[in-house]
Image (cartoon, rainbow over all chains, first blue to last red; front, side):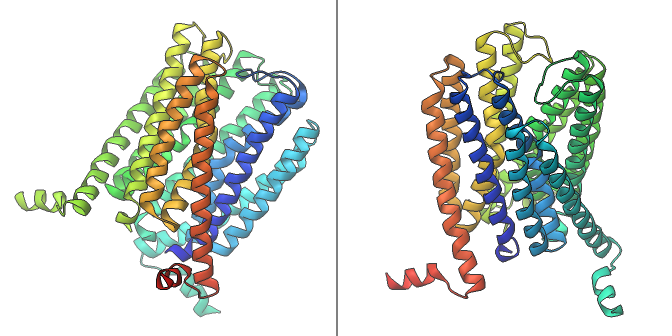
Length: 147
Length: 147
Length: 147
C-alpha cells in the first residue's frame, strides 16, 4: 500500500508547499503595496496576486481528488507526472497573473487541460474497478490477453 | 482496499466536477456583468454567484473529510448515498443563491443536515475502531450476537 | 490499515468541525454587524473574523496533506499530536485576529511552526520509503541495528 501511493504523496506535498509559498508572496505584496489586513482590495498588482493564490486554493481539492483517484485506480506514475506538470502550469499561471490580467490565460488553460486528463484517466480507472467488482469483469486483463 | 473505497472515490470526483462547473459559471457571470478580473465586486447577481461557489470551496475539505471517514470507518454505501444527497443539496443551494439572497437558505440547511449525519456516522465508526483497537472490544460483533 | 490511520482520521474530523464552527461564527458576526450576504466588507470586526476563517480555509488542504503524509510515512502518533497542537494554534490565531489585527500574529506563527514540523517528518518518512522501494535500503532498520 505505502509504495503504491508514495509518488502521489510526494507530489501532494510539493503542491502544498507551492500553495504555502504563494500565500507568503501575497503577504509580501501586502507589505509592498501597504494593504493592511484584513483588507483584500488595493493596488491592482496586489489584487492580482491575491486572486492568483485564491484560484489555486479553489482548485486544490479538485486537483487532489483527481490526482489520488487517477493514481490509485489507473496508474500511479502517470498521475504523478500529470501532477508535476500541474505544479509547473500553476507556476506559469501565477507568474502570468501577477504580471498582468491577460497574462493569467495561458497558464490557466494548461491547468485545465491537465485536470481534464487526470479526470479522464481517473474515470477510466474507476470504471474498470466498478466492472471488476460488480460485474466480475476484468477489462484490463482481457485487453492484455487480446493483445 | 481499492474496492472498499471505490464509491467514495466516485462521489469525490462527482463533487470535484460540480465545483469546477460552478467555477466556470462564476467566470460566465463575470463576462455577463462585465466584472473584469481580479475584481470580486460588481452586479449583485455576480456577487451571489461568486459567494455560492466560495461557500462550496470553504466546505469542500469538511465534506471530503467526513465522507471518507464515514465511508471507511462506518459503511461505504451509506456514506456514498449521503455524498450524492450532498451534491444534490449543493445544487439546490447554488441555484437558490444565484436567484436571490433568501433563496440560499433551503439548500444550505440541507447541506448542513447531511454533513451532520455524515459526522454522526463517522464518529460512531471511529469510536468503534478505537474501542476495538485500544480496549479489544468489538462493539459491532457483540451487538450482532445479542440480536 | 484502518488502525494505522484512525488517529489521523479523528484529528481531521476535529479540524473539520473547528472550521465549520468558525464559518458559523462568521455568520453570527454578519448578523451582529448587519453585513447582508453576499457582501464581504463592513465593520472591521466582521472583516477580521471573515479573514481569520478564510485563512483557515486556505491552509486546510496544506494541513491535511502534511498531517496524512507525516502520519502515514513517519509515525501516526507524532503526526496526530502535531495535528492537535495545530488545532489549538488555529484557535489562538482565530481568537487573536477577531480581537485585533495585531493579535493574529502569535497564533499564526505557531501554526506555521507546526506545519513546518509536519513537513519535516513527512519528508523524512517519504524519503525513507523512496530509499526502501527504489534502492532497497531500509534506513530505519539500519539505524535501529546500529543503536
